[in-house]
Each structure stands twice: as structure tokens, then as C-alpha cells.
Length: 400
Ligand SMILES: *Cc1c(COP(=O)(O)O)cnc(C)c1O
Ligand code: SF4
Image 1 (cartoon, rainbow, N blue to C red):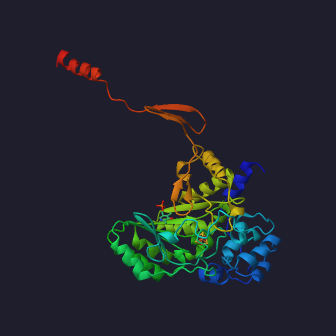
Image 2: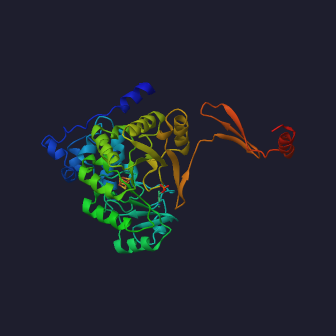
Image 3: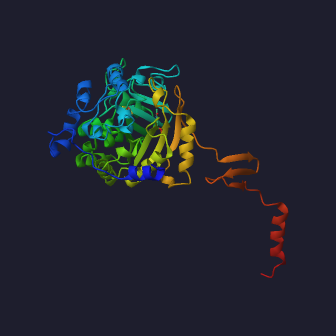
């Protein structure tokens, strides 16, 4: 297939099927509680629905003890069971490679535990705080940067101290932005989330609140009209979803995102660059175009963190740069995410860009554009004194 044929195949919106759950009614399928209850989380449940490769079977047995396996029926149906390299499959089904940690890998690659003044609150930047409000997700991503605490099966537990966390935020008047994450905050009940948001909104210096969630992708059924009505009481509220591949954006997901957007919630997307999953410009172009059609603005493209067991999913940085190079100038600027590396050990997000500056000397900058044409942009110069004097002298000699 040519790149254009691949692109065309990836950009359509399709409803998810439900043939692997023949006993489920349409009503059950659309009920997020049913979806959660029927998640695929054991080897037997998995093998009764698809044939695993040897690497996957070993992965479920070995890696499932560090980060649980759990896949919602909605997401499971997107797997191409005949394709061992299916990009959906590779994100949620463990593989044996995950059980090995490369020497450069870490349990806490972003150094979050070092920046926790209160358990559950990561205060890395002066004006904004990451608040981990749950350790559970609808499904688990095999490359999760927080796999040390999510899913509840690893050695480390997330212990949230709610009252201390709120008091810390109340005292720290420099914090103007709170990012709720986890785990997945939208897995909490409407009531619990409402209480958290209400408490945050009672703090005058907190201007901006956002939620990071993969629920719209894993479990679009959870985005109920009731949830949206509750969320919109707490504006300005932004939401960052997490989508890596255009296949994830189904008709149901698009409708869920539209419900959120119609509730006035600006939507962004965070992607992780993953080997064999989305590490080429055609897939990324289809992804960002579909996101724009779903009213989602691509926000960050993350270089995969050095999380334990991720070597088989990480790409060279040059691949990410090449992808950005092939987007910038070639498509809608709104569709281009900022490529970032989270500085290993706790450096925060560092933007990575292709080089468009060819040289920068005092007084002038030499640039290239997306077509490799070269341009010079001079810095502004003061108007020479002599010119000023001549201008003034024109007034004296004129007849006004
Ligand atoms: C990503 C992150 C934020 C938010 O960063 P933005 O660039 O504002 O999106 C805040 N705190 C921590 C610890 C983070 O990892
Ligand atoms: S949804 Fe987010 S927090 Fe949950 S497993 Fe995936 S990356 Fe980790």
C-alpha cells in the first residue's frame, strides 16, 4: 500500500463491533459499568477470545504481576486478532520484553516521588501541581510512566492524603494550575469528582484546573451527559485525552469527545511515540487530522519515558524529529503537537524541535522553511541620528 492508501484507510470513523461478546445486549454494551465489569484481565479471558503469540503469553504470565492487564471490551474489539503487530494490541497486551529492564530504565523515570510534598501531589513547577487522585485506569498501557503505582499490583502503593493535599494547595498561593491525573480521574464517581473540583474551586488562587484522562478512548460510555453537566459547573476546566493511534478514534469516541466539547471543555491530546505503533508520519498525520475532526487539539507528543520494561517500545529521538519535520508546514498548525522529552530523573518537559535556525549572529538570523528554502531576518536597527535630523529639518523648510 502507498502512504496515501494507508492514510485513507486510517482516517475514516467506524463504530466498534461487539461480536466477541455475543450475549451482550446493545444496552449493556453502552453501559460503562458493564464494560468495566467485563474487562479482559486474565490469561484465560484473553485466550478464549484470541490466539496469543508466545511472547504475549509469557508477557501476561510475567509482566502482569508488575502492572495488571485489563482491557475494556470496547477497546478489545479494536484489536486486529490476525495481526501480531496491531497497534491497539501492542499497547495493552503485555509481552515478554516487558519483564526485562534495560540499565538506563527506572521505576520512576520522571522523578515524581522526589517532588511530592504530600503523597499524591507532585509539585515540580512553581505555579502548577500534578494531583494523583486515583491509581486505577479503565485499561492499562504497557508503557505507563506511572506503572510503579497504577493498577494496584506492583510493590508501591499510591497513598493519597486528601486533607493534607487540599491544605497544601490552600497554603501555597503560588499554585494557580492543578492537573488531576492518576490513574484516571474519570474512573471516580461523578459525586467524588464533583467534591474534589468543588474544593479546588473554593481556593481563590487556583485559576485553572485540568484533567488528564484516557477514559474517552478506553471507555467512551463513561462520558455520560450527567458527567458532562457536572464538569461544566467547574469552568475553566480543560481536559487532556491520551490517544496514540487513529484506530482508537471510533464513532463512539468521537461522539463522547463531542459531548465534552459541547460542555465547553477545551480538549487536548497527549500521545506517546511508540515503536511499531505510531512511529511514522503517515500514522501521525492521520491521528492529528482525526483529532481535529473530533475537536481535539494535539498538545504533546512524548518521547517514551525510560520506564522499566519499555525498551521494545521506545524509538530513537531522530524518529520523533522526522515526524515533526513532516508535519510542520505540511499541515494545519493546530494539528501539530509539541514534541517533548521529560528530562530523565525529574527535569520536567523539554521541547524538542527540528532545527530551522541555520545561523544566528548579532543582527541577523538565517532560517530555513519547511521546503528547505533559506531566509534572512535582520534584527531591528535604531534609526540613524543623521536621518532623524534630516526628518526634523524638513519641518523647518516646509511651508506649513
Ligand atoms: C506535565 C506536568 C505538568 C503540566 O505541564 P504543562 O507543560 O503545563 O502541561 C505539571 N506538573 C508535572 C509534575 C508534570 O509532569
Ligand atoms: S491511562 Fe494513563 S495512567 Fe493509566 S495506564 Fe495508561 S498511561 Fe498509565
